[in-house]
Image: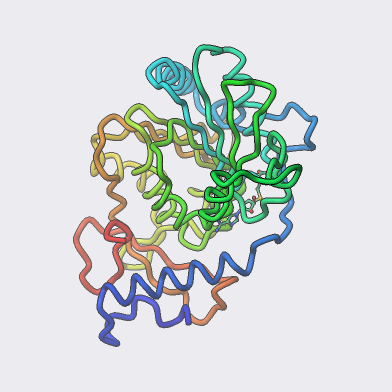
Length: 307
Ligand SMILES: C[S@@+](CC[C@H](N)C(=O)[O-])C[C@H]1O[C@@H](n2cnc3c(N)ncnc32)[C@H](O)[C@@H]1O
């Protein structure tokens, strides 16, 4: 199934390819629903907080800029929305959101934990389990949003999101003010597609901090000669193409695994200039796609920016 993707020589139309890609991604997600992963963000009572840890991977001036942006975005928004993409237990999301809700009692916060395993998310209370869900809650659950109930803070709500990241970031109904992710992008089948859609979903002034994308694995990007593009060169090209986004890269001396930081300055679509190629004959569940970057439009490849 996956092996046919983006083989335009076989005469598929772009719409057919898009549908096929959606089919592959949906199928792959169905296969991992409920699957266990190794989580790094501690047990439920641990005060681990991945987002701050990610910010601390940046050099001091970039770090200060990111913190300032997050704080000014909190003051600008009526509801500040945070998402942990691939949240595991959700402890980082819980600890961060509770701290922000405590420090800003006059503001409202919503925390969204995206995962393929809803039962393992430890956020608020699983209200739909502990009592009969209301009609409103059932309607949300039908769409993949699991209300986790009130936290200890009346200005904070948690939701578990059981959706494939690629689709979730296309369909998510609100702009997001802060997105973070660790140990998840290297599992995604088309991580740059997820990243492009994440950048598009940011609010103006919103921040995304993504680890395990730039260091190879599924996130490895090649040029049209199939030569690997180094992260630093890739970010340089993406900066040129995206003047309305600040693209930051963490300090390699602090952590060899890089964090990509994105701050959205204007409401324009993110340009990845990337294209998907299939990786041959892998099963969809194990597979991913080769990714090609090109400054010039490639009519024979499936453009991430057009999906
Ligand atoms: C290795 S765990 C990382 C958990 C946590 N961020 C940490 O560092 O401990 C990977 C997470 O990504 C989620 N995940 C993997 N593929 C996904 C997909 N296609 N869509 C949504 N979530 C996905 C898994 O359910 C899991 O929550």
